[in-house]
Length: 270
Image 1 (cartoon, rainbow, N blue to C red):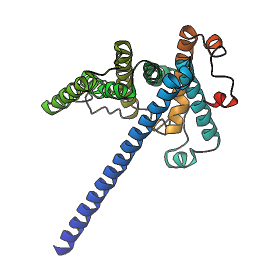
Image 2 (image 1 turned 30 degrees about the horizontal axis):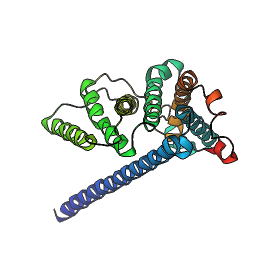
Image 3 (image 1 turned 120 degrees about the vertical axis):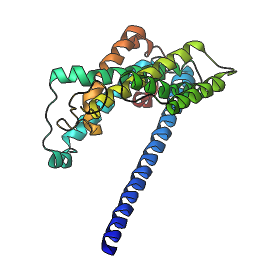
Image 4 (image 1 turned 135 degrees about the vertical axis):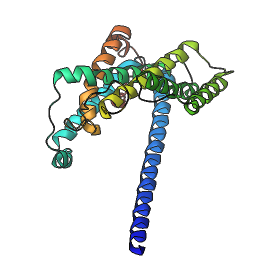
């Protein structure tokens, strides 16, 4: 009995240690995510709204960011970053076109609209208003999770949504540089961000035994859960959507050469 007790205690200790390790890992990831997100918002605000009168084509700049990230992802795949994953789970299969357009393309479209509208809104609103407006992503995500039956409505979750909405309204009220158009644009970006998370949930964590419109996932057979693979699959459609939108609205081929952003060679690397 003593040995069984010790074994049970050791198992409980190991389980608790695993929980703490996962909690620490998730906390660090959340901290890095918020830190990099805030830093990127400050950088974009400086480039799009302050430096030399603001970059004339913010959506075009976003599309170039997507193109660079896709090129870097393809280079990483060519360098063999998937070797360990393929040894553990088998060789990665190519994603059929039907699966791509049904499951992965909506994720890319939502991400493209989210990032493009977010960057464009920074030309009209302050970083503080932007940050507050983007917190509504939580509300939209939870509402869509209820709609698609990924989550079951509870009074606790309803209270969380209410607190977020009240805090958002109180934070924005009275802002001297509040711009309605930029704020609405940022809210639409937050909605797109919520759709992105919902679509990603359907790709990454489908389970036939859970509520919702589920089907067998593709994250294992195609290694979609690997960040480099995900970027290489999603970012091409993001680039196409944002670049097309920029070409129709900004006329970048005319606006950039006639702006203050090309005299210095360093501007090319912005």
